[in-house]
Image (cartoon, rainbow, N blue to C red):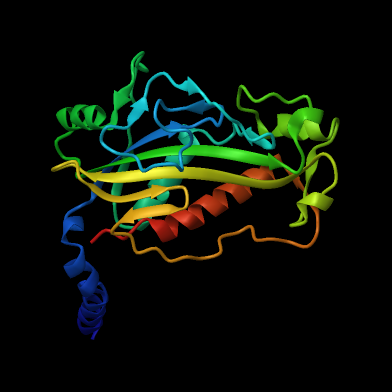
Length: 267
């Protein structure tokens, strides 16, 4: 009986994925994924790209190397220091493992003094590890948005800030900050309106370096089965207090939810 149940479950799984497998044969055999992460500060830009949501990551995209100063900057946006490569790597590895992949985090050491394009990084990666099936490149930008311009807070824009620093600047001596509801125009002074991790990511097949799927902020390309969901936190009619741990947890939970619905299953 147990053998029969296993066979039936396997058959159901196969049938549920059959159309997907037939429609997207290029995904077949993708298991071992090398992950490359790069923080994108809002006060920096690439030579031909103002922000990470402007275009997909391509083979010629400069991924590591010197940045240029941004020509414009949101007066309410602050870059968050607490979300770093180590934490992002753990999030990506967890989601990819749940999706059936074998992920591993890669680094470029020492950091280059010239710009390294994606295709050169993939060539290096293949030379070091012939077993890799795909390369996942991701720009990420963790940000907190103030309810009002930061001009009155004394916070600059030329570096990233720890969440506790932001809280102290908005509420001196306090351990939490007000997370305002949807009415930003009526939000109290010294509050935040949003905290979010923006991402742009592309997975390239190692065999021919062709993109399997692409994400650039809210844009998607390639063969993605995107299930649009409302990931927490949702809008609220009330203001509430949030300390650094709460803000970080909400940012991570939101990103985890989005990645779960963006990244396709391995098969």
